Image (cartoon, rainbow, N blue to C red; front, side, top):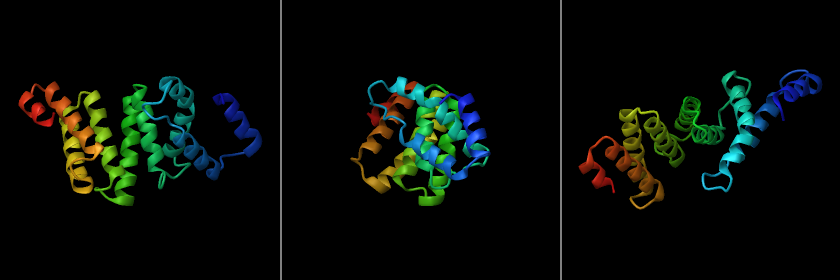
Length: 177
């Protein structure tokens, strides 16, 4: 729905913001963020971008509580990162991470996956020291929680290898591969 039509609808139908509907909108949009391997990923993401932005605004301005909605915020971060909107993606990942830490602690797979994605984001932003810290943090947590053969560990190790190669630390990179 176009933003002008949306605002008109809110004005005419709701006569104000409905918190429950805002939360439902955030949930619906967050659930429909496509998987990275989905066919026509960019087309689907472009179609959802306006809805995602609006749902994120609900969280930022306090209209909708993000507590219990960390997964959707994480998904928003993935989508914004895919679209090259890295600063917004960082805020969404950080909000999701804060909620995951509070709900499940530092050693939960969802928390660690968000930490790993923050590492990817920091690497994309050229903040390589921060990226390394995130990857190391995720790697240590995954080792503790999942064991050495889990796919999330392998992705994190690969990310560390790529980072070390980018930094010219080829011996360290080789250890990761």
